[in-house]
Image (cartoon, rainbow, N blue to C red):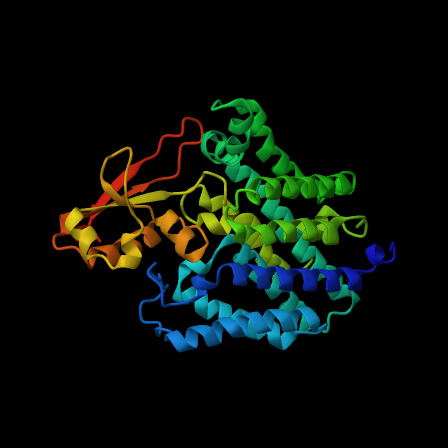
Length: 392
């Protein structure tokens, strides 16, 4: 058993199998996301991209699944990885909602495999590949924790996860004090840093495994957001495969690549670019912000006449708001119910979704989109801006 953890080739093989199976699981759990025939609108990067026909939908999705399996069973899957990435790029350009955090991470890791496989993946390239993937995983923990620092996570996200259990035991009270909740994101940041240090590496792996076990213990019994269940299993496996008893690399090897290459690309995408998400210059979901409370949100108010004109598949998502007493569509709820993933939390996505609703309105004022900006980290206040159909 010890030989596995002293062999770069063994780690690479285990990582490839885990990565491809995790990707396969995520795709299967979000299959409607990859279809173009659905009520939740697609948001292409370029409007002129060709529309995928319903028949081709299933062909492309099946191809993704088959390529994932081939990557898992083939020890040198350069061609399947390239094909998978090209197909994934086309599908994500056709709909930005497909850039879910787990899929983005898997794609970058597969791209690392593809880049180093073309060089034959000798012992040197095995080490560089492992260090590149270590950078991706450590950065994910670091930024995920930092995104959670604030009242959005403390007052909304964490209570929504634990209160169903605590309220059952203690009644409807907030039992977990704020300072104790704040330990969680700081622990995540610590895991990300600790994985890169020799002294705290194994401890950080154990803490990561405990973290993902607790997350699954919260999500699974309530059947919440099952598309991230395999991601949590995979993240624990990635931490174990990449870092457990790994004494052959230093933090310098991971953060300071000796020469320009794919590791530098990953350093830019996964370490530097998330900084810009705090200034709304880089997408939240590309910055490990899932379940952080630090994302934009939206609500779409519709008139009764517009509701009646909507197709039945969209009508089911219209609800009476308890706070405003208006008929309202929550894009995140709509996406979760239909696609089994949260809506991609960016202004351009919310506006495009609203355009679809506007196409059924008689008057521009019959539909109003309200976008709630990212919450202030210290008091939770949000800047809001409203748009009618005439503004979109």
